[in-house]
Amino acid sequence: MDKQPEQVSEMFDDVAPNYDRTNAIMSVGNSALWRIATVRAVEPKAGERILDVAAGTGTSSAAIARSGASIVAVDLSPGMIAEGRKRYPRIEFVEANAEKLPFGDDEFDAVTISFGLRNVEHPLVALAEMYRVLKPGGRLVVCEFSKPPRALFRTGYQAYTKFAMPIIAKVTSSNSEAYDYLAESIRNWPDQSTLSQWIRGVGFTRVVYRNLTAGVVALHRGHKPEDAAIRASVAKRRATRARKPAAAPGGSAAEPTD
Ligand SMILES: C[S@@+](CC[C@H](N)C(=O)[O-])C[C@H]1O[C@@H](n2cnc3c(N)ncnc32)[C@H](O)[C@@H]1O
Image (tube, rainbow, N blue to C red; front, side):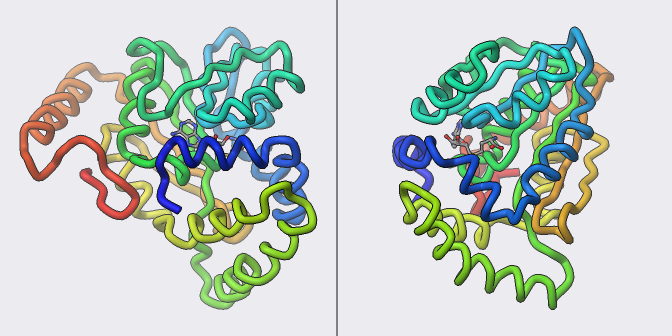
């Protein structure tokens, strides 16, 4: 499956009712630990405004909202949002594409995306949007599947995604084909260093990552520069790139423009 927003949205509409349960089973309980690590990396504080992109049913947003920060949960799939609104009536959900966020420049103290960037058709466009809506000095946290660096572990993990995941999906999910897509999208997603380069490429500074569960998941962090001169040079670089025909706006996992 390609990552046309309509198709992606329909697929998540289908899995919405059982999404969190299937997730917990497939990750062998690790999804809860990944969420704790993500919230710690976001470092939410009471009074801050935080954006959770591709928030799904709001599980990632709810964990952040507990800090007292005000959270906005954006997602493409009406089905996932409907499920989220049922579970977390106090969270503000907004239906929108990560590639065209319906917010002004410099609005949020932190922006986070968990297990969503891999599903976006043009991840670099989405990253650039996250940069735009962040306040200067604001934090970005990306939690996403990645590539375990140790060969032996990687082989076992690949066997798990290929053979065990489809069986678990058949038993627990309302749309097991969606989980074939999941395995494929994980296989095709770039490694930790490449994602770091993409994040730097759209203008973030102080980009670092840390592996969770031996690299099954990686947590990337970055900052929108506080210094106006650095932001101006990012904007200039982008404008130059946009003028070049070879660097048309877009950018996909296979052919990044940054
Ligand atoms: C695997 S779920 C992750 C949900 C949640 N962040 C979590 O950690 O449980 C991926 C979500 O990304 C959303 N999504 C995919 N493409 C998107 C896009 N272009 N813009 C906004 N959301 C998108 C899907 O609708 C889905 O809810």
